[in-house]
Amino acid sequence: MANLQSPANHGRLALVIGATGGLGGEVARALLAHGWRVRALHRHPEQAAASRAGLGPVEWRAGDAMREDDVVEAARGASLIFHGANPPAYRNWRGLALPMLANAIAAARQSGARLVFPGNIYNFGPDAWPVVRETSPQQPRTRKGAVRVEMERMLAEAAGSGRVRVLVLRAGDFFGAPAPASWFQTVMVRPGRPLRSVTYPGRREAGHAWAYLPDLAETVARLADIEADLPACETLHFAGHWLARGVAMAEAIRRAAGDDRLPIRRFPWPALYAAAPFVRLFREVLEMRYLWRVPLRLDNAKLVALIGPEPHTPLDQAVRQSLVGLGCLPAAIGAPALLPA
Image 1 (cartoon, one colour):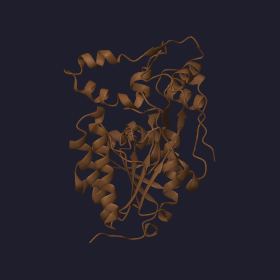
Image 2 (cartoon, helix red, strand yellow):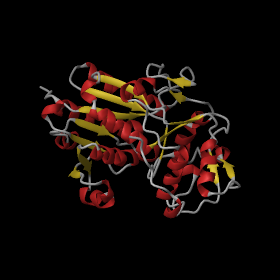
Image 3 (cartoon, one colour):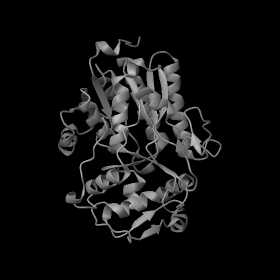
Image 4 (cartoon, helix red, strand yellow):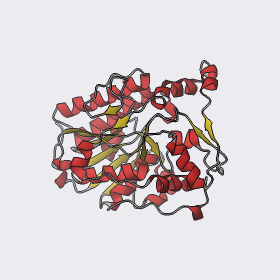
């Protein structure tokens, strides 16, 4: 029988799965700032603790997100589980993402914790855009989109059983430092190198939604503080930085570099098509090209009704801090990122 103790009886302990990742690390930091105790799961906890020492007093536990027993044990006493684990470099989503989520669901069922899942826009096809709401139809045309739909279905079914409380927070493309799988740092700029040009992968005039990791993490922490008041199965949208002209992100990078003449180059999509038969990663990247060709904006009215205005670092400040963190700009150029109270 599942242990459905009230969160108040657990204390404010959160388990963060994926704390060495971009969003998971920022969520751990934000939860600590909100007074939560944070536990993190990692196969090599000593190594993780050393590499992420700047996060603060995180309790690192040895374990593998692919092993149910490890996740269940790490979640003991927690009232919140943040599931931020993702397969690296788009690889084997079905074989890795689904089992990891199933293990997190099992841990939430045993501990009585609220399970928080960061969603994205892969779920949606042409019938949903340009403005996507929580109730928009999910009819994706890609394999990764289908996996995302299946993951959210797993969460809904778990919540529908009455034994798990779920929160899905969907957002656009990540940026921040680090955001290892983000287009910002894998395509637009080259981490560790001075800015010589910017590569923009989309149609310049097609709008694009971006989520600055510290802002998104702060949103998770604010929702964590009120999670007991939320429905057992809740889905919310984080609007983040909606840029009606997608190329405005590249122009913000120019401003951060202090060089309005910095070249904005096109992404070499034709070269990826040519190499795709031989390189699986290129095939996976090409599948998501449609998201760079059409405007797709997340409606956050429901979220704002719960927490008030989203945490929102001004674009130029967020971009500058991201570039400093990626080693593309000297720290002296960057100013500390401030979140609104």
